[in-house]
Image 1: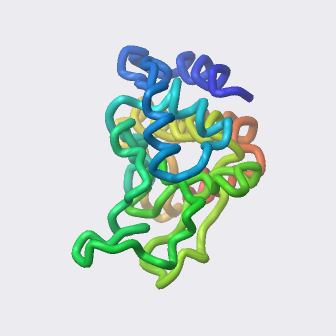
Image 2: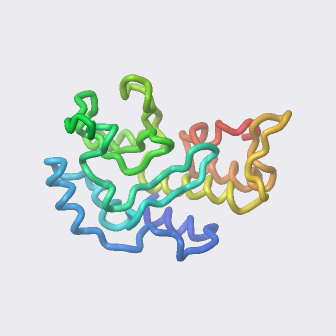
Length: 203
């Protein structure tokens, strides 16, 4: 699936296309800036995402916990305070992989692509663990990430008044949302279904 195909799929269920920020701008000028900051050429998939699909400003997708913040073009940069840089000490943090390009986060858990191995997909690492060895692959590529993020956001905000029911049956996605979301994600999330659906006891 291409990003273009993913965006078209999202438009089929997104309530207000005008609020969907992906693919509305040309950020070609940012490519040169980023390659200078990182001191390397960006992988082609990342370059395509930055140029044509990165939002102009930070964009928030709802999740079952902290929202996913997809960084706007100005927040796509080499220096990321708290990840690879300590602003108090004004120094880089040595335990950060210089090949990691952060484009989003979920409750401060960085979501990134490893530029040295982009074929391994998009990762969400766990902050506060003492190192960056813990995390999960959340999507094979940007197309799958955007589609799954948008689908979860839609499920939580466009069915029942309360998208999540936490009762004696467990932590569950509300009935109407679940009927739409889980079958879609079996198709869209592929091998990462558990990442996107496992938090709900009725998946």
